[in-house]
Figure 1 (spheres, helix red, strand yellow):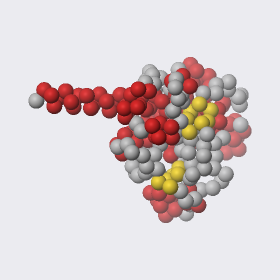
Figure 2 (cartoon, one colour):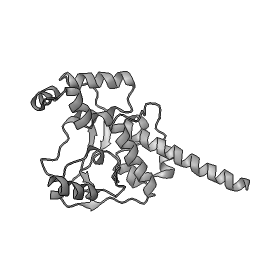
Figure 3 (cartoon, helix red, strand yellow):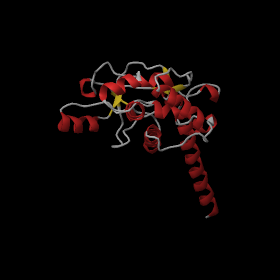
Figure 4 (cartoon, one colour):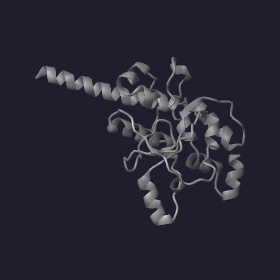
Length: 217
């Protein structure tokens, strides 16, 4: 599929894969050799064997992005970073995203090439504002880290999921929303679960350091 699309639009299969699909996000937490093999299969037109889940994708958009795009281009468009599991805010504007209420099941990595919106644009939809009982700074960290993973600027292979940290930081409803609810970490989406782990560990370390400083005064 990817080589065919690349030929139609006049660019390389690698460009299509990295700039127009969600595959870079899904492979961000895989071992480098496994990620390369998966990528080579896709750009060569082969169907990869890997079927790891990536979490729950969502039909989401940012009202500030829509307003800007309507004024500049006359129509809005979908941002890959808004569709990612657990993303509730726009990484550019920091605003809570809007979401179309259609249910989105947990998706395997190889389906991230074809995830699409039936040609509907964000400004043609009405949705609900995403809100969770969690500090906005934590939700925005999820969005920013997810955006960096999607664009290949965040290595996550060494962040092993620790669900007990999540339970201290993230609301259970949010963890379910991100597609990371489950009893064993090996069945959880690798990229999303590692992002939650990194943010949780950083937050808890900061919290514990603050307590230690307060006790030492």
